Length: 233
Figure 1 (cartoon, rainbow, N blue to C red):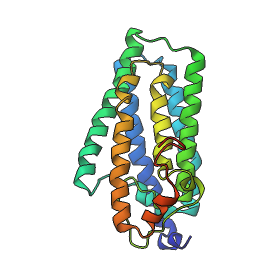
Figure 2: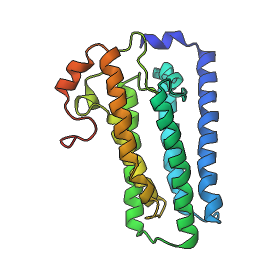
Figure 3: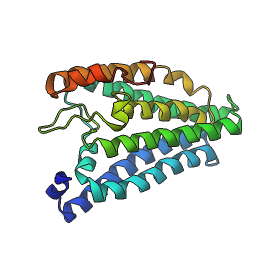
C-alpha cells in the first residue's frame, strides 16, 4: 500500500509501542474490574477470555506493522468529533464499566451456573467475532475507531462489505454478546440488551455522514441492502 511509505521504521516501532501501552492499560483495567469484584484470583474463565484477546492481538499486530501501519495509527484515535457520537461514546463506556463487575459479582455470589459447554461455545463465538473484525481491518484500512471521512478515503464494497454495510459492528456484536456467557454469567446478559440499540444508533449516524461525505456511498447502500445482519436488517 502507498500509505505504508509515509511511516518509517522508527515511527512504526513507536506506533506499536504506543498501541501496546494503551491497550495494555485498557486490558489491565478490565481485568481489575473482573478480579476485584469477584473476590478471587481463581476465576479461570477470565484467563481464558483474556487469553483469546491477547492471542488475537499478538496475531494481528505484526501483520499490520508490516503491511498497513497507517491503519494502526487510525485505531489509536479514541476521541469522537461528532457531538452525538461523543455522548454515545460516554454511554458505552459506562455500559462496559458496569457489565464486567456484574459478571464478577455473579461469580462471587454464585448467582449463575453456566454449563461448561456453553462457556466453551461462547469463547468460540468471541474468537470468531474477533476474526471477523480482523478480516474487516484487512479489507478496509479506513476502519477507524472514530466516525470520520478522511481525505482520499476509498469506498470499500467487496469482501465482507459486499454482504453487509457494517461487518465490523457485526463481529463486535458477536464478541460482546457472548462475553457474559464466556465469563460464566447469565446476569451479565441483562445490560447487553442495550448493546444492539447502541450499535444501530451509531451505524445509522455513521451512514448519514458517509452518504454526505464519501462519494459513491449512496449507490453502495442501494447495492448492499443489509446494514448489520445478512438477510435480517
